[in-house]
Image 1 (tube, rainbow over the protein chains, first blue to last red):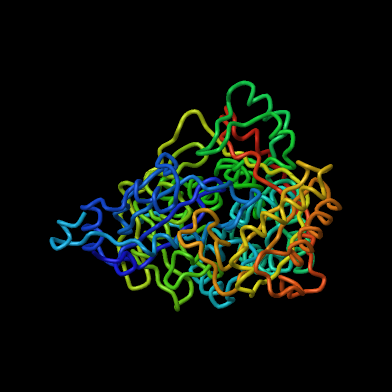
Image 2: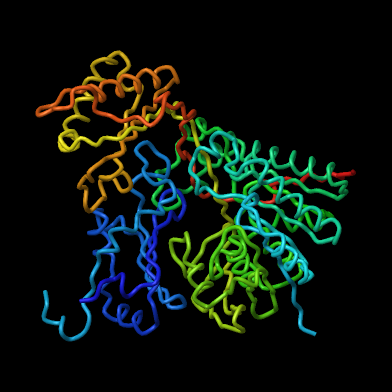
Length: 112
Length: 453
């Protein structure tokens, strides 16, 4: 297993308009990126679990080759600024991603 | 000789500032255009709803003084989009007044085009009834009530009205709500450069040096547009553009990095390639614009839902922190009882910093720290009720008796006297919808004005 924080150079969240939140993970190099992309271990189901939302609220997941990046866009918990808002810009919603570990190589293949 | 033009983006948002040395270096490239985006929905619904700018007046005036002087003295067209932040009528008027003030103080004369972006409510209601309004993403369907309740409605204009303003001889264009890249793409489109490259360059330039390494929202960026590619270079020699920094920026604040919808079409980056030209320059090619029919624009609106009063306090008592959920429940019950005749006219919210103040129910570890910061917020239909509810909730929490309590003098530490803060109007986004238009230019009428100083 590898910790995502060791594989990535950027892990961030931000509004994509007032109704959506988008998270970006930019990997340290193309080799790491290709391995993660090949395994498809980052997906909508994982994002839904991390953010405690139904999978249909994960609106898009994309592997973006030019930036060696994974991106997931989800429905915001609340439209930005509605009553109960805690993060208008959505810039501090990345913390659950910091704890993610990914299967890495043969030694992990047998692990559940 | 191959055709090329040079674009200067001084800062990410008008009023965010830029170093004078960077701006001077940017001007040394002999730019064909200076453009700046002044707006965003990012700071939330208050600014659009209330008609106020989220950037201070003095900061906007400072930036405008540099931009207007350079533009007029060197005869470089200057385009300003989403004036005043949210780009509706009061925001545009506010920025217009500052432009006039700078012109008088600096002795500048120029032909100014002003392009409002306001959508009349009656027009939007008609279009809605005719089925020409659609929700944008996970947004509830538009209702007549949401339209009527909105304080201001502004549509994001594409490059077309800006091009028309330039064709009308404008030296300076001051536009209401704009698609961010439009102020950069308008002149290149007028000169026949490919829309895909012009808009993709605009996407990067609208955030100025944010796409550089190290990134900054308050420093200048230069774009050189050619017929088959564009080049990005930060004006400051202390920054570089790298393939990583430019490609990473393409992801920023967007739902889908490959297909970026805008007025009248889609920017398709699936074939874009990024190339490091020199240590500080990146070239981008292959970006395409795919026009969509019918033409659509995004309409934004916000409405007032009440008045907000807050208090800020800390708690250090472990027994109080342990019992916090029950205490909050008790404070809510006492408040509901005390204001039973006002039920439904106010909302009470607790933010618990040190526990789940940032992520709320999505916090993976809602374990409180040894101390907890508490923000109590009351939003009510009128200011007096919000103050009364907040004051009651605050004093109730301060003296709330709970099982195991040892510290009977008070549960909360207040950093301030007075303890309660009147925030003012509370707004929410009410309209964020796509409007199909047959004649987009009719939504954005241009007026010309000779500024003489």
